[in-house]
Length: 299
Image (spheres, rainbow, N blue to C red):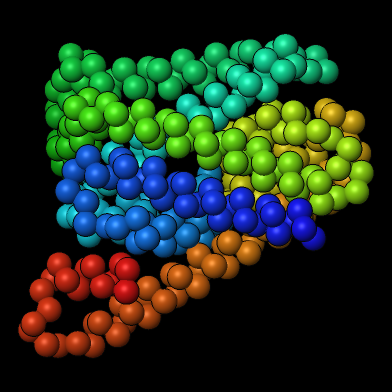
């Protein structure tokens, strides 16, 4: 129980760091959301991640809510997109540590191809964002799309992404925070294993491979990662000699921890909706539209 509660504490810390990273990236433009308000929206995002495919439902909600407040949906999308890229970069950093520990291979599974592939995708994405010439070519290309004003929307998004070229330190801070988050996930998974007799024989080193691989598995087609996540736990733990029944117990314990935070995010969302309904009944003209939006979002 002590290790399980420790894992819950680590998960709280992870959300705190994630909200801090989001604020650093949002502050590149005019951001009216404080860190605490962003933390609440992150919890709401976690709630929606559990019901939408590939864990992107929470991102959509965060883009919509933060974009409404700041009246800049393209900037909100850019911040969340860069968040994802930096998160992947932090994951690669942790995988590199795990790959170094196991010399790139374990039980015949070569990890180097995965590391190189993900690293190359992140590098190309950052180049397209930060390189002025490449960004201009992409913008000129997408502006030719006139269907439903899609070209205009995409050009705004690319311009918002390119604005990070003038705040490179934010990308550096974002990467450091992303690496910290991934390291905390390693500690989180280690604590879950220590809570179970039979898995507690594992040292922390295997989790430098298990934890980031679980994170990457969440991007596979699924609803809330259910099925994919549990199967990944069984497969990855079996590589280190853990039986399937113990691996399934590990997956169940991890899901219980996730459900607790999904419930918290749902409670926060209910309160936001309640405040929105109360606000819709207020007919006083003293409230401006922007004030209403701010109260709808964070009470």
